[in-house]
Image (cartoon, rainbow, N blue to C red; front, top):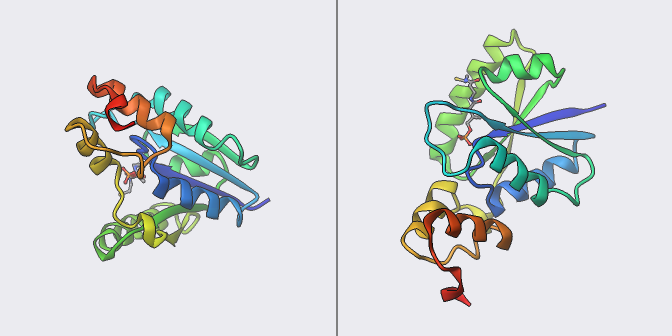
Length: 166
Ligand code: PNS
């Protein structure tokens, strides 16, 4: 069985992430989307909330599982016998950062973990979870960035009445 993991913060999941999830799920037998429990970051959504949102967003993809992890990705992939990590690339700036992480993970895992990059579909190339949060926090419209039920929860976090966009 060909297994892969798509690790990330997913705070919150965007249409860009979902596009990569769908494409990776069509190539691998089993794709685990795993939320990093990073104590150093101050996320908008808790790990549990992000897992729940991802479960809802991927409910129509039968070979996609949602999980969370803390610590090193290579320890998580070793424990779960997953040889491939998926990451999305939006621009050259992403590549510099991602290349370094991918090479570190390959070396640290003694070549047991490879990273496969998906180029983000052009329509989502400008999207990021950070910009979604910034736009929403100032009352902007995020309908083109995240599914409706996610937008609802983001606005709720900022105490914003989303009916203003209807
Ligand atoms: O969505 P993000 O925040 O860009 O995801 C980054 C992530 C989770 C892929 C990366 O930070 C990660 O794998 N962290 C786990 C810690 C780890 O393994 N670090 C070693 C690489 S230098």
